[in-house]
Image (tube, rainbow, N blue to C red; front, side, top):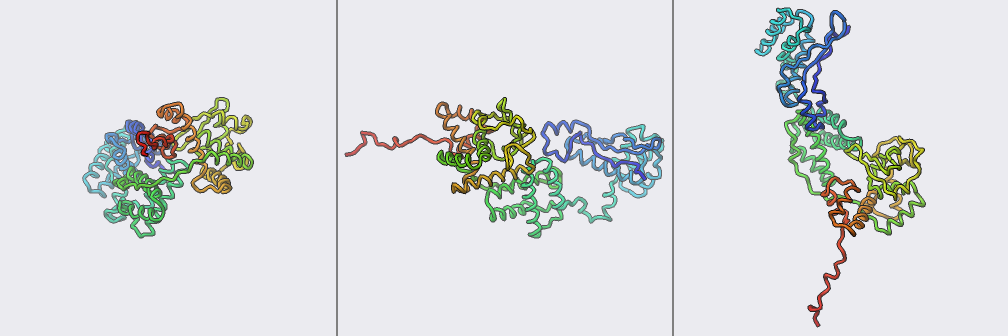
Length: 465
């Protein structure tokens, strides 16, 4: 037999509340200005088809926050489902059902609700014709969980959410927010923390039992086994996770924000010397022209290796000398293609615009794998070059970006003030602020002083015999 009704659902102003944390302030305010309500469909006895019933608001929109409004509507949703499962039919007389509820429930709020149903049913006003008739019966009706709590669960354990359930819910939300490169790393850190909790025999029956002391103990273990940097990255991932749990009311607050960040020395690639650049370029020109072109994209367009791996033929506009790059956490950024790079590009006019620029075999083709795998492939391919020249782990593809930004900076500073240099350089490198650029230039030692030997030379008056 077909069901006579569709289970009630909640309309939340046209947005997905599971992604509430990713919405902007304006998007949240716009959603809260729209009506939120419970809606359901019931089979019309005349047509035999499911028909949408009047929306049930019940005063929910008087609440000004997402949390309060959603909590109120969930009570309406649960109570309406209880009534429907008990046999409530908006097209028929429900006096017997009312009498049943009057006999089973004795709390004052429920009696008020049942009385309201009885009064409206006695007037024999069809619920489907009057919107205000449908909402009152369910506003304070007891939910199934409330009516059976004493027999199904011990008192005080009605809303327990285990660590596994909480983490699974949070990871589903994060998967829809993070990009495909960041999410696997994020999930891995969360899963390692969950395994550590199981291994160290922590009570994982309730997410609220995980406290600040527990997380600090785990971070100390991470620090002892790895490094301060990895410990800080783990802290950031767990803090993001617990912020999601807080927003979804599974925990009271994100206490990880109060855990300090340790000082760590960042690792960076060294810049190449002019002699090294000349030797490596000569070697690549003879032994690996494709990798040489990859290196030139890093050097002349100041792209990160993973950004190059995202490039497709359609992202390169040779006529207008523009490059459309999909960067991390941004949709698309436009960079110019300098003439020195244009002259090195092969003819792409007849290539498929959906093909990637770089594949293991050739320039322009299909390559179906994750972008992180593509980046790792070219890093390993360049390692063979490093091994040939006996270069250590401090050198890599990223070193070319540091090297050519340094060269560019030192050329520009010959004929311009430091402020003018940084202003021009920001447009080229893509840094978002002068402060970020200045920190980067300090880290790579781009700016060096002139020879100061003359400052140590004694004046003639101070020369002693």
